[in-house]
Length: 185
Image (tube, rainbow, N blue to C red; front, side, top):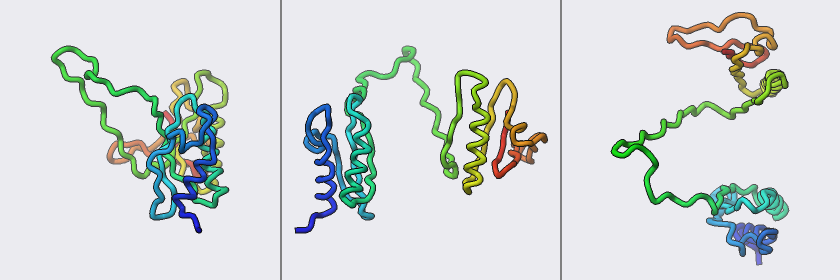
């Protein structure tokens, strides 16, 4: 009898033992809402507590690969998270707490990589420059924002000595060097 993708996914999950509980992931109740999507990709919520080893996610992906299943889409959730508050947020009596600011929507923005350190002189600008040039030479669209309050080093590292131009809408336009758009403040 041939197994279905759902039963194969369940078998892959049951083959992994959680060292904290000593039982497999299904018996431990760590998998919620397992479904096989129209594209054949398994999707589920994985209930991973803080005292569970994070390597369980890697073991799941390996078990699915061995079972010749597509890479699963896993949403990780901590079931031991803070309980919902029964009273409102703190604030002055009689005054409403303002809502949080709206999330800025930037649909054309890909990934953001931040290079930072609490100490100066450790090579943040060098790492950021080399990473930006490497990504640009690999064909990615790359922008580099230099926000060094003690002095902009990025323009010097890229060999750019002109100032950014301001367009008709009074917005600074980034300069470009080595395939990387640069902005330094």
